[in-house]
Length: 249
Image (cartoon, rainbow, N blue to C red; front, side):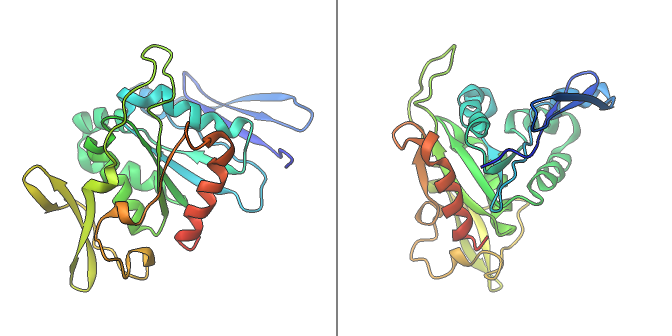
């Protein structure tokens, strides 16, 4: 596969982008100067486009504070493997944004980030299942008809913390009921199942993979892989492709 072009967006002051042409020459250009108050938020997003006829756009979801270093190992996988577009907002920065500007602002940001994506990849660590913005990203992805998968990353070594212990599968805590002929997102709490707040009803035509399932749990539908035990370095592209195809992408 030939690399056509790469665009790496790096936030600092000012906002710069870098492009590599086939001769390996790097061009650096200043786009514009971002307001200081949002610099910290957007520099966690990287989008890299490869020339590939079946390139998939992948949105990454994770527990930022605990798993960012492990997640970067997977996210930077495109440097040598390519064939997908990496894009995403991390839930650590979103949580801080929500405290400052409110939940509705964060929901709009996530919605914009998911626009045009074909697959949601949930990085599963010890506490991922507790993150409310991860839950929102999962249900919103289903509403948009995207493919969804999980990848366990606890065995990837963090430079400071080493490996971690496996956490629960977040898809075990997410499911759906029926309301007005549509699917109603549900979340399992200690007190039982409750309707997910601020989530839209999902139509059968949008998410056909929900139709005809015996168990209304997302874990009965979406696959979960292990980056280390499943040789993610060599198999990630296959996982993404099969997930996209499950959603009819």
